[in-house]
Length: 252
Length: 88
Length: 218
Image (tube, rainbow over all chains, first blue to last red; front, top):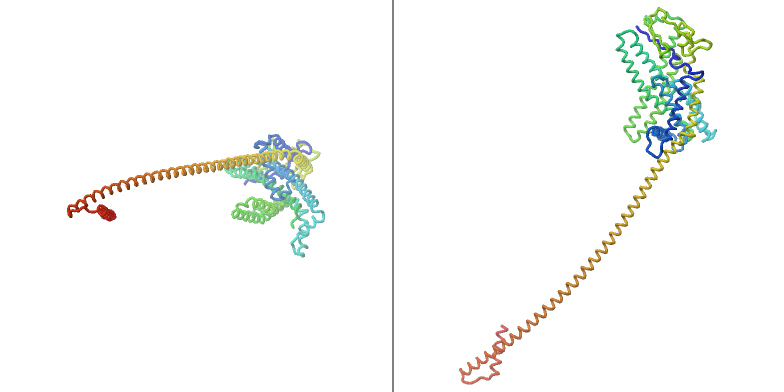
């Protein structure tokens, strides 16, 4: 009987520091910001009157994607001012997610709680600030606590739930959704990688052919993680946009 | 089962506690995944039905579908976080 | 029972297989752990990985990661807001504007060409109308001349016919006179032979005349 001893989780997701306070997560985050900036700087250098190609095309596709699929769908035309923020949010999260499947790095920066939590808090601050600015403090909280079109006695139940869900649950569910998705994907990849390695290099020749099965699973999950990295960045961004849009235009 | 009980009895107190935590974590995640599994299936199924009926509204339906999936999935992910907190 | 132990080796994760009961063939140092506990040397040997600092809960955010992540994102967001996005957007807008301008120019060119075509067509229509009018006028003139010459010819034919008719009537009258005279001479001679006396010339002439006119009229 073979037993696979899974390494302690901190072995899998924590890394030795490159220099004090700066570890791999910090490195990925900084690299994400630098790569995103480079893409847009290179894009803005191209002759803008020609048909876009290469980096410029990439940057324009990102901006068009954010405008058409996120801003217009959730906030409408007034939300166009939020495009730069949402673009940076989307690109940053995507570039933090995608190292999870890049060989050698193999670690999504968002599989640690710090970055998702920070981004969720930023989103929380922004949508509350937008709500207070657009509707005024009183109307904003009134809109949250007493949603219109509900019979009076229901408010007894609804008001605390709505208040807690908007003020507390939203940012945490936003952070945990991103964090847990990326961590789960990372743990799956680690599990199947370990299983493959153990079966192939475990010293038992009969088990070596069996090792192909977890390896196929590993390849499949890596492909799946490509999708998840994009999808989670998209979902985080669109939820932020939905919250900001909801704060801008309260339901009547 | 007997072998398992024998195996558990041989463990130290700390190891027994860890084993129980691992079992609890497994149940926590397994149970937490049931509801969202059904929910996501329902959301996606209905979304596909809507897209099949009105292909011209597919873009809007897809966006809303992802939002619905995101909200439903959060429950399973909270289960996953609890799994990590308890078990590892 | 074999157990697999996974460690952070020098070349990535290292998997060791060991039979239960035997001790690990190699000892570890703190360098194998993810975190080196404060105050310990990396080269210090430890019995097993259990002695490693398990580290904080995997759910808890870590301050250094929070700072680096936050810093990176804030810098990116501000750069995006101030420089990166406006520059790319301006380029896009300029291109879209130039495309729109080109479309507008094409539209105006098309409208100009269409108005030229319309002017040409109206000129063509005017010319055609003029040509038709001229042709009609020429045709009317021709018709007039033709009918005039026709009438002239008819008149000449009628005159000739009258002339011929008159000549014929004259010849007839002359012939008739000759025939009457001859008949009267023959009749008076016949009467003279028969009764021996010469009849009155005037009576004979009137009798011949009435007989001839009866014959002509019958």
